Every structure is written in structure tokens, then in C-alpha cells.
Length: 206
Ligand SMILES: N[C@@H](CCC(=O)N[C@@H](CS)C(=O)NCC(=O)O)C(=O)O
Image 1 (cartoon, rainbow, N blue to C red):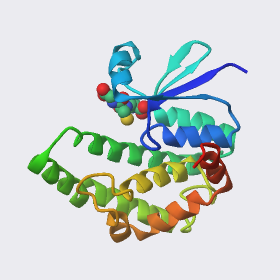
Image 2: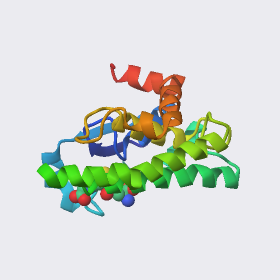
Image 3: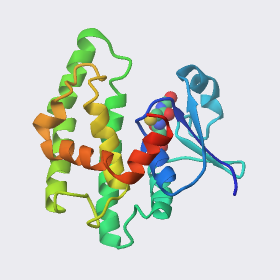
């Protein structure tokens, strides 16, 4: 089999973690190339869009995390075949990307500016986004986001809510998701207990 390398920052979150999990569930062997920020700065200009994640297959480099999620999600049985259910899955994938972008715009801020920017997020786009996801989950049957099945949309929301609940993001209290969207916290625990997710983290020695 051709060597596959997924390059992204060295943490269990962000735009590559759902792809790592989907690839693991699909049983695909890949090099999990984890970059320090310094290493990324060095190689940034050599990447196609000056950004990661990037995927290398047969010496060619590919971009766009949700394309990766769909591609490996299909191989893992984690992507709906029904077009409407696929749309519901995609809507969730893109919503999380929008929220990630809003968060990234606050990186590098400090002091009062950071406090204000994070408060704007938690009272604005994050609140709206989490509440909408909470409603979507309820409408889908309160278990999975699409297809009445565990899909890449569930993995994407799981990774994001886990990050919000980590307490590692300044001025976003760890109980923020519990207050805004309690269904998503229960959902996070449901996803964490999925055998494929348990096996992925066990395989990483966690
Ligand atoms: N649309 C791209 C966005 C990729 C992206 O913006 N990645 C961020 C990290 S999550 C990045 O590499 N930022 C570095 C920079 O802009 O210098 C995707 O979906 O993969």
C-alpha cells in the first residue's frame, strides 16, 4: 500500500484529529507527522496553501480537512450514503470549521483584547453554533448527528467540544458547553466510548 502521511500540529485536536481518528477506524496505516510551531514556520511556504493539515499520497500533496474526513470517513463506514443524510453530516462538519476559524482569529491576542475577543465568541458565534448543534442533535434523535449512525460529524463535534471543555482555552470556562449545549456534552461522552475511538487513543498509549 502507498505510504500516506498526514501533517498537522502536535496536539490531539484542531483540523486533523477527526481525520486521524477516521483513518484509524478505517484501518489505514499512516504516518502521523506532528509538527512543532517552529517546524511549521520553516515549511509553511512549501505547503500548497501555506496551511495544514496536508496529506501526502504517492508523493503528491493534498489539502482541506473536510475532504479528508469524507474520504477516510467513507472507507471507515462513517459517512452516509444517502444524499440528504450526507448533507446533514456535511453541515455539521462545516459549522465546526467556521467556529474553529473564529477561534483562530483570537490566537495571538493578549490581555484585555483577548478577554474581549473570547467574550465576544462565547456570547456570539460560539453560543449560536453550539445551540444550533444541540438542536440538530435533538432533531436527529439525540444520539448521532446524521444517518441514525455514528459518522465523521460526530467525531468532529466530539473533538471540538472536548477542546472547549479542556479548560485550556483562556477565558472559555470548562463548563461553558455544559451551560450552553448540555446535549453535546453527553454526546461527547457517547463518542469517547465508541470502540473505534477507544482503540485509537489506546493505540496512542493514552
Ligand atoms: N481550509 C483549510 C484551512 C487550513 C488552515 O487554515 N489551517 C490552519 C491551522 S488549523 C493553518 O495552517 N494556519 C496557519 C497559517 O495560516 O499560517 C482546511 O480545511 O484544511
